[in-house]
Image 1 (cartoon, rainbow, N blue to C red):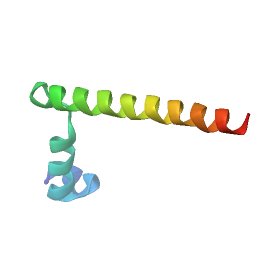
Image 2: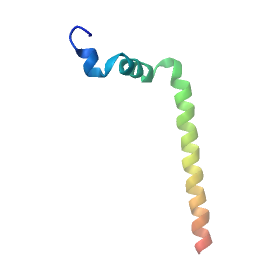
Image 3: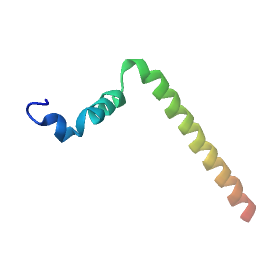
Length: 58
C-alpha cells in the first residue's frame, strides 16, 4: 500500500487504523445492539412526552 501511494490516499496509517477499528465485528455486535435498543427507548420516551405536552394544550 505504501509503495503504490494507497496508504497516503487513505489518509495515512492513523486513518487506516481508525477505519479498521470502526468496522462492526462479531465481538462488538452485542454492544451495538444494546446501543440501538437504548436509542429506540429514548425515541419512544420523547414521543410519549410530546403527547403529554400536546394534551396540556387541549
